Image (tube, rainbow, N blue to C red; front, side):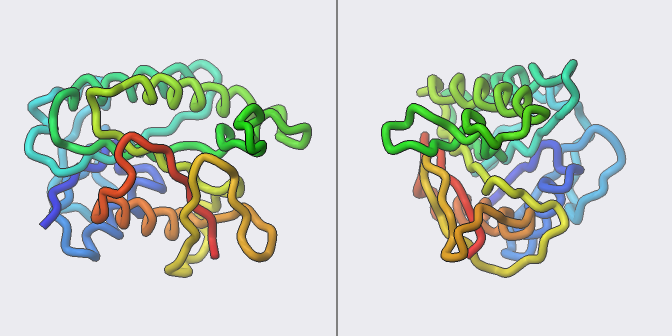
Length: 210
């Protein structure tokens, strides 16, 4: 039985990842800042920056579901991810990160990202830049068994759970309908599949609805 921790588990993505993992018989601990809103019976109430290495000892995988969107908090993407990396450095525990789509490449040469394209909304550029910065820093962590999972461009919080998805890599992947879309529920399936398989250590992968 896999023993996993979901950090920032009260968020929409975190709650669905907890639910998916429990449905597959995993031993799940939710790390939350306030009252538990997840399906997990095991709960640790702690701010992400107060988590210590001892809190994460013994887990097979830690899922970082942290997210923030306000301009004054965007730097927390880098700070919180670096903190979790420091806690897990040199251990066998995997770190799986709920990432963003803005940093996916749209050119074969990997010189242009989704957020560089003309149609990318100006309002989302600061968030995309902050998440891309955190990913860049993560790539330099050779001491952590990380996997960064980017959703499709249209990441639907309340979208349906279809039960299937296409697994992509560093480039933006479109489905047969030419869409880049996935629900949080299907993304949770991809996340838990990766926990089970362990196929993409120190890699960024991506997901899109079939």
